[in-house]
Every structure is written in C-alpha cells, then in structure tokens.
Image 1 (cartoon, rainbow, N blue to C red):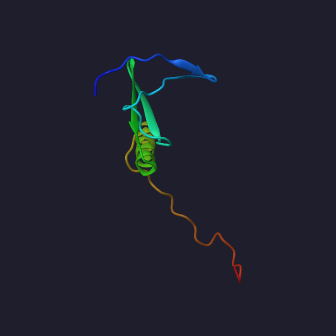
Image 2: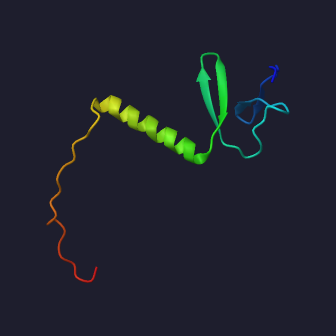
Image 3: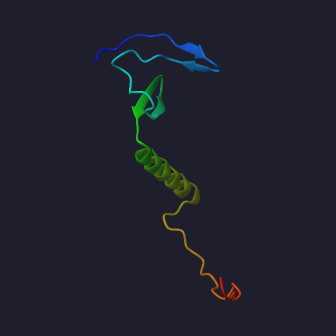
Amino acid sequence: MNAITVRTFKSGNSEAVRLPKGFGFGPGTQVRIEREGGRLVLTAVDDAESWRRDAARLVDDLRAIRGVDQIEREERDTDWWPDRPGL
C-alpha cells in the first residue's frame, strides 16, 4: 500500500493520528508502538504474544543486571512450619 501523509491532532492530553481507511487494524485491536529513530512503528499483537515478549525482555534485562544466566537457589528448611493439624 502506498504512503499517505496525515496530520497529528490533539485528543485530550495526547497527540493522535487518524489511520486512513485501509491502514487500520480494526476496532479494539491491541497495538504495540515502537520508536525507531524518527519513525513510529505500529504492530498489532495478541495478548499471549505480547505477554511472552514482555516476559522475555524482562528476563534479558534481569540477566544483564545480574550478569549471570543461572541464579543459585537457596535450600529451604522444611521444618520451619509448625504442625497444624486440620489445615
């Protein structure tokens, strides 16, 4: 599809752009917005895909902060909880 030039406008406290016919995703579609230099890229995503991508990005960020791939787990004392019959 060919490029079309449109103008931004004010919608409440936000700046908005109207997607011309043929460029829309459909009402209620969840869209991811990414900035690439002077460009904004809109990508339709489903909830599962978005959740997986966000989780993977979080894990990568945490690994970068920690600097290791595997975090050692502490061994827990199993006798810590008192006996509570009936629970």
